[in-house]
Image 1 (cartoon, one colour):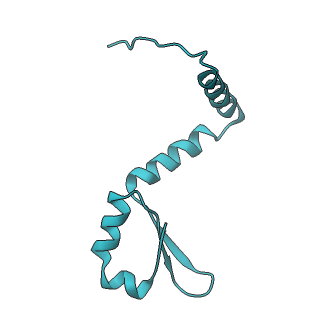
Image 2 (spheres, helix red, strand yellow):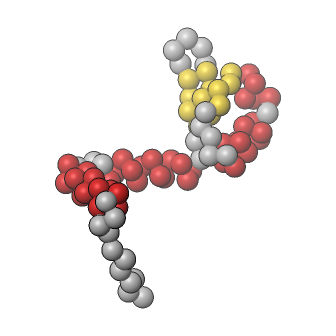
Length: 83
């Protein structure tokens, strides 16, 4: 996570954007007392939204927990994909 002020951000926007994208960083721009903005790459945002969707219902959450448990106990199996 990178933090900066709005003034420093304005001085070198390209540098900050490059760090966010290339290093999968999250940038927090402080804008004064208890105020700020978060910038993240589109890939990170999409990943966060996908995770949020997967955990949006108890049924999905239980399925994911079950799958993780099977993987941890080496009780998973490989299946060929249909092309």
